Length: 417
Image 1 (cartoon, rainbow, N blue to C red):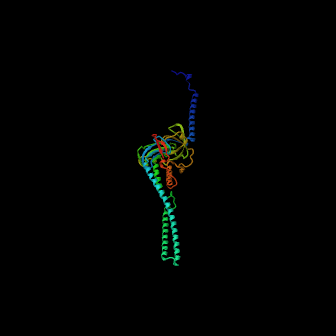
Image 2 (image 1 turned 45 degrees about the horizontal axis):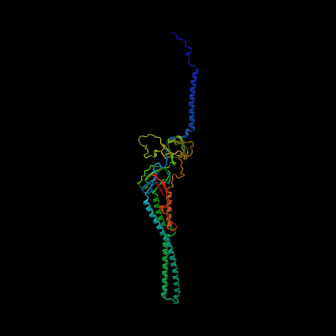
Image 3 (image 1 turned 60 degrees about the vertical axis):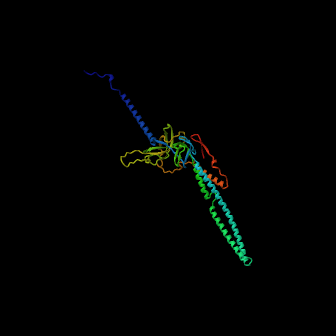
C-alpha cells in the first residue's frame, strides 16, 4: 500500500532553534573564557606574590624559674595560670642559715674595718716616734760635738767623752729602728684608704656573697607573664638549678610558620604577612612581617634526623620554619597563647635583598633587670657597715630594711626584701 504524503505539521525544525542553541553555547564558552582570563590576570597580579600555609603555630619564651642557692621551700606565692609582674616573689626558701652566715660576715667586716683603722692610727703614732728619735739624735750629736771640742782643752774627761759617743750611737740606732718600724707599718697602709684596704675589700666581698645568698632565698619573677608548669611543693629541699615553675610572657610571642622548600624562593626578610588564628576564626586578621628563616629544615634538627643514604628512599618535601613578628597593638587587643594554630600568607611583591641576609642583631634579644638590685643592695650594705665602723655614721639593722608585702596564692602576705 502506498504511503501517505507528509502532513504539514511533521516538517523539520526551523533553523532558528539551532541558532539559539549555538548562541547559548557560545555565551557559556565566552563566560568560561572570561573567567579563565580573569583568574589568569588575578594570578599574575596577586596570587603569584602570595605564599600560604596553615602549618604555623604561636611560639614564645618559656622562662624557667630556678633557684641559685640550695634550701627548703617555705612559701609559694604563685600557681599555674596566675599572672605575675617582673620582680614579684614566686618562691621563698628558709633563710635561717643564710642569715647566720650574713651576720658572721658583717661582724668580720666590722672587725676588719676597726683593725685597719688601728693600722692607720699606729702609722701616725710611729711617725711621731720617728720625729722624737730624730730629735734625740740631733741632741746627742750636738752633745758629742761639744764634748769633742772641749776634750782638746781638757775641760771634759775621757770618760765623759766616751759616754757622749755611746749616747750618740744609741740615738742613731734608735732613730734607724724607728724609721724601719715606720716603713714596715707604712707598707700595710700605703696608697690606700680604710675602704680600699685589701683586708677590708676581702671582708666586704664575703659580706656581698653572704648577702646575695640571703637575698636569693626569695626567688622573683624575671619577667612579667603567666605561670605554667609549676612543680615545686612546700617543704621540698631543692638544689641550685632545679626547675620550679615557668613564666610565659604572652605579650611578646611570635609565629613559626613552616613553609615548603619550594615556597621560599621569593621570600625575603621584612615582607608583610597577614595571619588568622583558629581561636578567633576569620573575624580578626593579624598583620606582621618576616623576621628571619631557620638555619635548616625541621628534620635536620630533629632528635633522630633522617638517614637517606641507605635502603629504599622516598623523596619527602621538606619544610623550613619562618619566624614572623606580630603587631603589638593587635596582639594586645586579641591575645594569643603558645601553641595555637595560625594561617599565614606572605606577600612577596618586594623581592629585593638577599634571601638569607647576614645582619647582626642590633638589640639585645632578652634581658631582665630584676637581679641587678641585689648587687646594688649588697654594695649599699657594705658601705653602711664600713661607714659605721669608720666613725662616719650608724649602720641600719638588716631586720629594719623596708619590705613590700605581696599576697600569695593562699591569701597570706608574702614579704619580699
